[in-house]
Image (cartoon, rainbow, N blue to C red; front, side, top):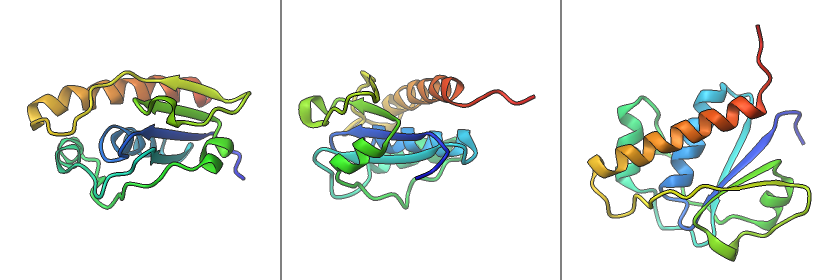
Length: 136
């Protein structure tokens, strides 16, 4: 295990929202948070429009691959952020859970994915501010 907080981002296909959130968390935390992501029904590949939206702001998620969320990932995480995976996510007492209601970027053009990306960034920034101590 690690001394860093472990955050798991989950959406159905692990191809858009959770991958963007994980990309933000990795980048914005500077490695201070261990980041994981998964899906209840992982897609075959990451959403190319999500990749492009993140590339526009300097975050490369193109090498990420949708993964199946496991019970072990949930159990081992300090914070579990779900994004529309419904009842597919196992619940463990004592964990911090949040459900972020976000539009699914699947099948949407880039101009509709940008606001979703920006919403995710704001939520990740807020989460990191709560998780990480402020250093002077």
